[in-house]
Length: 239
Image 1 (tube, helix red, strand yellow):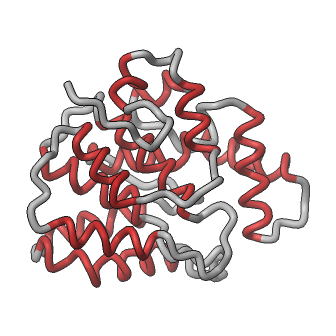
Image 2 (tube, rainbow, N blue to C red):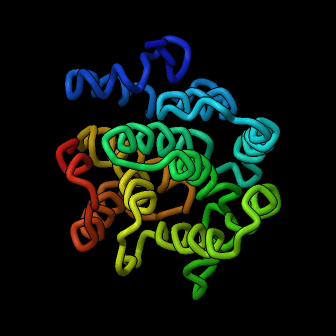
């Protein structure tokens, strides 16, 4: 089987999955690295190949467009930036290898993992809980809706985006794409231990201008996640 490294000097997701948990440090290094911007076109293609989706057809132009948008950081975010997107993408791909998804859902998962927080505003609008998720959805719609041209599928994407709003626990989560994305969105802060969680919390603290201690922000995250859930057994076992 051909090897598809997630990035230069990193192993493939298949290697990480097959040798888990001994390979957790490889994934941690990749998630925490912010030395250079990721190439989402190459990373998406690599993840899709890992999920046995090889024929991209007319999607190559779209993936290039997605790469350009997701590399923008006009609000100078220190948490919701391209490194968060790459973390969610790779962890989602890792979880997807252990979940029975059809090929169209594998492609959809890769797209949503990269785009669910794109053009994030850093701080939220008070009283508008889903404003960021709706904004990201509209940005994706401009380049992706014409690829599917299906209102029912778009309503599904809209529901999944809104489910990623962290403070509110979504109801009736039966969709495997949704389960994987929700787990991948938070696992970077959970699966590598307290030190990594605190480092990521410090990035978020700077982004949202949180004036109290980083530990309190991270403890608040742990409290909320305790009252929500990780949906997949493979997610729970990784922590």
